[in-house]
Image (tube, rainbow, N blue to C red; front, top):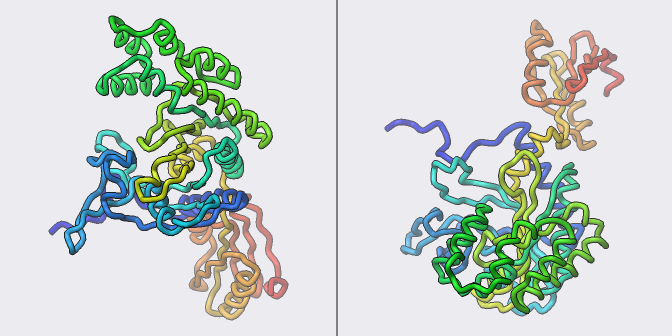
Length: 416
C-alpha cells in the first residue's frame, strides 16, 4: 500500500511563522470580543447530522463530511459553528432570560467541489449574541467587527450591511414561484440585473416593483441610499427593514464605526437561517468576504429555545491572505535563539531560564566548537528568529538582531 505523505486535497499544513501569525490574530481578535463581554465556548468538531440538516439552512447536505458512529448514528463534521453554538445555548442556557454573549474559535469543514479551488478546512472565529432582537444588538455586532479588524492592522475595509426582508418583500410583491425566486437570487448574487429584467418581462408585476428591482444596483453605498430604498420599498415589511438600518446607522456613528460601513439592499444571506440584517466585511487581497454575519431569530427554535439571536464569523484564512497581500505585518511573539558549546552549556541554560522567567521565548541549540556562525544565522533567518545569542568559548557573546542585521559583541558575564 502506497504511503500518503501529502495532505488530501483542500487541506494544508500551517507551521512556523504562518502558524504564529494565525495564533496571534486569534489572540488579538479574541481580546476584542472579551472587551465587549463575550465569553468563550467550545463545541465539538462533529455533531449529529441533524444539527446541520437541510432545513437548518447552514450548508448543502452534499457538501457535508458525513460518517457513522458504532451505533449507526449519522454524524457530520461541522461546516459552520453557529448551529453548534445554537444547539449548545438552547440546552445549556435553557432557563436563562438575560442576553447570552458567547465567542469561539474553531475549524470548519465543507466538501467543496474540487474544481472550485477552495480550502475544505477553514478556521473561523466569531461571536453570538443570544436573547436580544434590538437595533442595539445589531449595532454592537457590527462595531465589534470593525474594532476587531482595526485591531489586527486593517485600515482599508468595508462592512456591507443589508436586510433579508427587503429582497424577500420584492420577491413576494412580484409573486414569483419558488423556482423563479431561486433563479432571481442567483442573478442578484451574480449582479446580473439584465437577467432579472428579462425574467420579469411578460409577467404581471407592478411598475413600482419592477422599478425597485431595476434600481437595486443603485441601492449600494452610504447612508444616503437608505432614503432611496425607503421610497422603493414595496410594502410595510420592507419599509421597517430600511428603517431598522437607519437606526443602526445612527448607533454606529456613536461607536465611531461609520467610516467602515456601507449599505447594500441587494444583499442575499449566504445561510438559509438568516432572518434580519445580514452583513459581510471585505478588503483588498482576497476574493471573498473576510467576515460573514447576520440575525437568525428562529435558529434556536430548532433546538427547543425560542429566542432571537445574531452573530458573525471571521474567516481567519481569508483574513491572513488579505493581510499578507497588503503587506500588513502581524507582530507575533519574538523567538530568540541561544547557540552554545559544551564549554558554555551551564551559562546557556542559566541565560535561557532567566529570559523565559521574563516571558521571552528561547530556543537552545548546541554546536560543535569548530562550527562557525553562518549556518546558525541562516537557520535563524529561515525560521523567523528575532535575535540570536552566539556564545563563544572565550566568554564573549555575539548578539545578532536578525530583523535589522545589527550585531554587537559583549562579555558573557554581563548577560547573566
